[in-house]
Image (cartoon, rainbow, N blue to C red; front, side, top):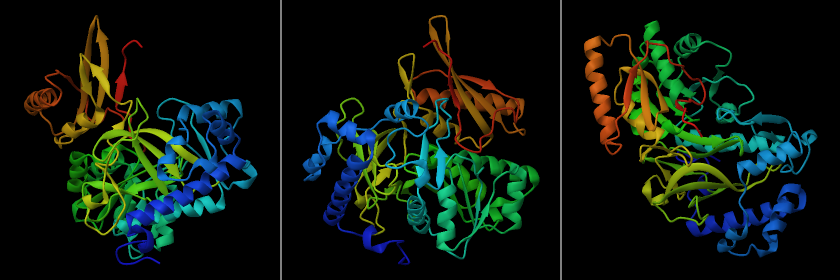
Length: 443
């Protein structure tokens, strides 16, 4: 039963010692289930010399082998179409979703049973309720509703709370903006990039978003949802509060959400997940405050157990005391910082797309951007391609270009970025995950 503050007050405010005991009990059941029913886990556990009965204390978790995306994909390829992770066949499932495939790799295919899908909606309820979404709201889901799992679970979570929910699929951006205004929506869900695109289109159409009923924008799908500069820009354009969430197809739902208090991070839904942060090179778990790779164990999806899955997400975990809302769950400070493999080395300097976006979003006259890395002879070059607002004059551009060169160099150890001006509106706009970095250097 939900309370004014928590969707599940029994577990959201559970003492840490009791929470750990609950997680360990659930983990024992999960590894027993996977070992007995999943061909993949049975073989993986045996190869690692791990037996479920060895899981007696919290430290025994390190005995369990990691699962990687590459292993899952290889399993799909050798035993198509779903691989050997599932504990049952497609006849037991009611839903099929795939990863977005933005990396150009073969998408993962994931199944859900009716029970799994109810759990997916429940996880979104934790987050939506924690952001202050209630049955009196009118929510618009600006999403394409394809096989990519995206906001499917959010839609069902909104309905479970009792919120009037409007699916925004199969429409133009202009049509979506018009519906948001016409229906008096108070909550909008989209990727951070698409929230900016919707605001851009609203301005073209003459709609005043700042004075519209929208008070909450739920963000997911990109690390940009926790970049302060991007959040500030979206909030300025919409006149609403933005809240970050993150999920993934591999678990079918969200595992963290930014609470209404907005303490600078996102609570991990710890009664349903074990989230570890490891050194990507050694595999050793890291203490609070250190950046590392996120490893996820999920208790909710029964047909495809997910145990110690290496996500390649870059995170920093901080204790629950980082927030003051009464939840005892730990947080990821700054949400998902990026990807472990996102960093690019350019002339000896580390370049992270998140850091570049943090700078670009401080210039509201930039509507969109792209990063391009090339090799000119023996020298690497990095170019920021800027799609400016049509209102930017040639004189304005000179000032903007100089400011960008300085800001980027100051935060990248003096590395000089080339700045290229694109025609207004010429760079791609994204509804789902944005792809803004192209590395054209020889492998």
